[in-house]
Length: 192
Image: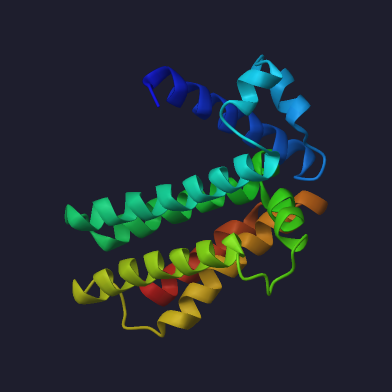
């Protein structure tokens, strides 16, 4: 695929991501995406067969982006606390920004097939996230910048508190101090 095709695919994903964050997964159609991107149906279908295909690519891209970002910073020897604080600051901003959240769409999309679906992409993405966090925390411990902690416990706290707050922010007003308290707790657990 050429540069123009890649640019069109990115436009489709960007506009579809906006729609999914606003309307949820179930309420977005290929027609909605055509209207948002100003593409004809043929133009859209040239790149994607369904909203499911677009949504899965968006989710995969988001997880891969964080994994790549963290891996690159580790490779270049960035201090572990700096990497952690940058991620947690982004998480805080995302927890407070309920307008750009895909949490409801993610829940809708993955609840359609149930948690035991053998092709559960969300489970695969979760496993990828766990590995990314393990790599970062192990890196920080080896450098003497993080405490030697129970990896499974701290990763559960990080992933599920973040996702939980993102979900709750969609259905009720959120006290702006909640994300900061979560971040403070994670930092207390990890930082030397």
